[in-house]
Length: 456
Ligand code: FUB
Image 1 (tube, rainbow, N blue to C red):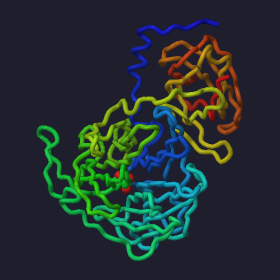
Image 2: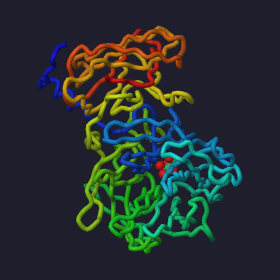
Image 3: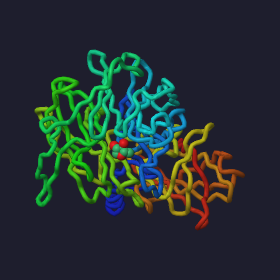
Image 4: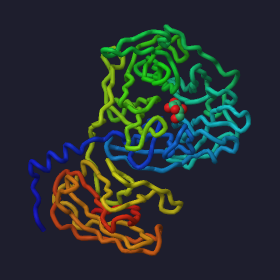
């Protein structure tokens, strides 16, 4: 077995390929809502359809990470069909855990009123399955019943805020699926939400900072934060703070200014702390083929100012750095990746999400993989191909880096007829490396699908 030493050239290629935004390249993802549970960071998203001319969104999706760079696609555990009373517009969601149950709040178009409504689904795990918790909307009947955000205060009281451009809220009962009394209405005024204020942010640009939609409500060090899309269209992200969960609010300024290059007239944020660091999630239209109705989620790390205020956060391609290395040993889902080009993912009731639509030259990348001393002896994959298969080149550090192993994928008689194929490692791969899975075969047709990898 050959030993491999890093050259300066391969290090430079690896650095150039270190973009992590947008976080998902296999489909459009919108309206990110992060949630931390048991050391894992989950992000709940909407899903813009390809070539859409409006927010014709059908389902919600979930992704997770433990290192901020490799993300696992858990598919869609909740869709419009799960709400008998809904028929359209699976818009911005948020999920929260209480007493071991996961409550998934969503806006969708109501068959009952012809307006928008807030629904709540419940599940036993962060990735579902989820089912409509009450068989009817939690709140229904207004165009601007969209974008629910949920938070449970230290005293156990849960709050649900939503709305565009009015802000609505209720105090949820302990069951998380009901509330007493009327929906409260909060009209965002200038002092609370910056309405009408002209804020110069960059030379030659001015922003009218006023609440528009997409609230994100949380508490930190005794202060309540309301982060939201502001300024009409095109939107930027601004925030307000309060000493109480129901206000009065004080407008605190802009977090992420509007940028023409974001290629999206909406922006929608979610904030969380994870493993001692703070992260700001948002969406833009920067994936190839993307735009205002083809958006993609991104993340930026940030640090709160000493007084608890939030600094200006600018979008980057680099996104968040890795906070841990990736352990490849055991089964690694093929839909776990730091980056990909050309591929999509598909669901299967038996095997779960798998990597699909693979053509010659497509690839996926796992970042920061820690092989420890020596590296794997074999690399395997569970594959399926209704045609004639192809090859998987497992390469180290870059797309043209040294080949660790080549897996020959045969035809298996069907796109979901899985066969496990293993190949010997050709070189030693000690230490931490990015790993590229480069797919090869005849030019033109779909080659094969992949369910999971093994490094042994
Ligand atoms: O994704 C559909 C809508 O666009 C959301 O509900 C809004 O927040 C905006 O992002």
